[in-house]
Length: 123
Length: 216
Image (cartoon, rainbow over all chains, first blue to last red; front, side, top):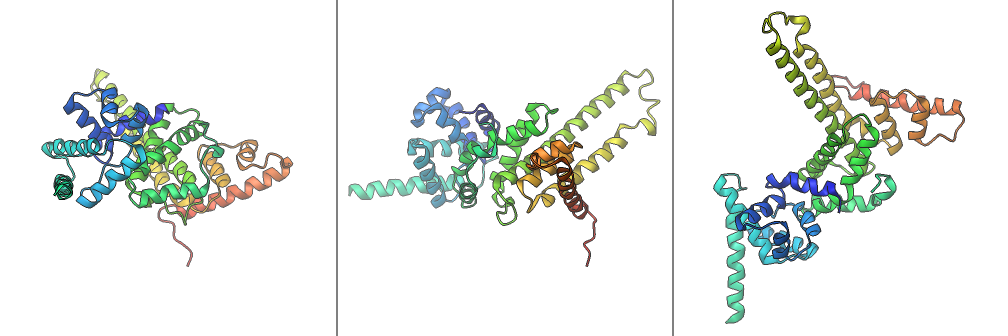
């Protein structure tokens, strides 16, 4: 893994355009270090660098899930944890007044649809 | 990665990567960084040997981030390859960074000279006003940044290398011949061919200059 990639991944940690920003906020809120964050996501630390450089999922519910799926498919991380990372990051950013609008609603819609789907499967 | 074009994906694969970015694939930025970042840094370091590596790294990052946020800034119909576009964009970003650095440096110097002067700036007249030369320098750099992307369109990689050298003030024909890939030709032919390419590039520079009127 290139040190340059690691440096770039660190640089974009403050930029909500990149997943790096959400991963950092999630790790801080959970008190997780690098290693633990990778473990929770189910990936190596090298993959974590690549994950940071992904674009953050889009705001609208449908696109949010599609983006999560694409990232999961590419990097084989735990989908629920990743969705939680993005939701948590957005919540923190929104509290700070710097989150892209609509993302929390989108994340909630996805969550609700998933729960409804599970309930439907059980009945 | 050694930054040589051989280590880059084929033109077709470069376009496919860019297409993923345009289509909104959230993983495309990560893959593009993996493919191009080291190459761009090496390219800048090799072509700007007097510049600190740190600036080259930052400029390469700037060029990639700009593409991630505005994927359509690269138009495949106008550029020969994504790598050529990124190299030119990173070179422009490097010039921007250097301009900013010079500005900060001069401001620091200016403030220090005023602060240290017993007369607290009493003798800093028009001739010594740092903002005058800075203003001129900024205008030149700004013109370069505006003009560079327009010049590069449609040029071959070899021509872009010659352009890079021209902008850096290189004058030796042997260096141009090496960059253009004609070192094997007799010196006379090298000289004639390099002159032809440089004339072509100079014409482009003239045409791309802000305020230049196109002949009707």
